[in-house]
Amino acid sequence: MEDQATLAYLNMFAVLGSLENLTDLLPRAREQVRTPKPVSVGFAVKDGPQATITFDDGHARLTEGVDNCDVKLPFASPEKFNGLIDGTVTPVPSKGFTKINFLLKQFTPLTETLEKYLRPDPKDLENRDFFEVSTKVMFYVIAAALSQVANHDEVGRFSAAHTLDGDIAFGIKDGPQATIRVNAHHFQTIKEPCKEPRAVMEFESLDLARELFDGKVVALASIGTGQIAMRGMISMLDNLNRILDRVALYLA
Image (cartoon, rainbow, N blue to C red; front, side):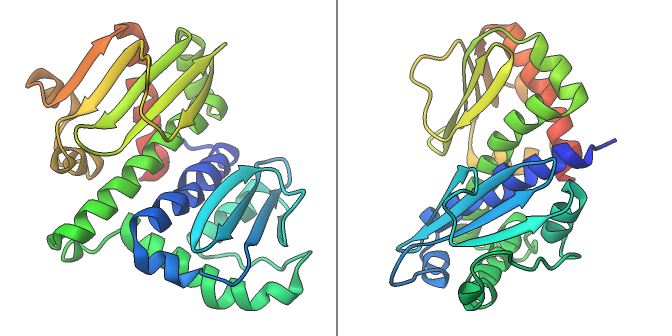
């Protein structure tokens, strides 16, 4: 079963965190939140994650903490924050009422665009440009979710406790790349190519990655055919695969 606190961390740093990638990849998304001056929105979850998304010239950047945000949205529990993500909770700002217009007319439409790309209509995926942006954004969600599940989920922490220190290269050939950094059993996702990996997991193509993300092909079979390249410290990859299975549960 999924844990609400873990889900809140995943929703914060993987789902909302992917606004960084959406605004980098999609000009229309940048236009939705372009403002004359930077605007920052903080999300403060009691007994859960706290982070701020800053919008500057249409680009989004997420950082931990809410000390310097223009707008602050408080949540009484991880469950309440998760309700924001699934559309059942509407928060009331505790700071930044003058920015309500930004929240309603710019930030909310941006999150609707994100949902369109993360939970796409199959017909939209027939458009290659849409397909590529959707798959790349989903990749970054999964890459970030790996660390949140490894650090907060009970089953994920068990796998993390048996993972050696070092960097894992996680990516799609000729596509997006990320570094999964393990230090004292704590995972950190860096949305940049891995320079000195101890282990590598790389999908053969965007098309294969999409089929895996959508559950249309089995990862084990793809490893057997070489469509997923795995090399280096195999024990690290074994644990990463177990955590990936937990990620799939949370993102289902």
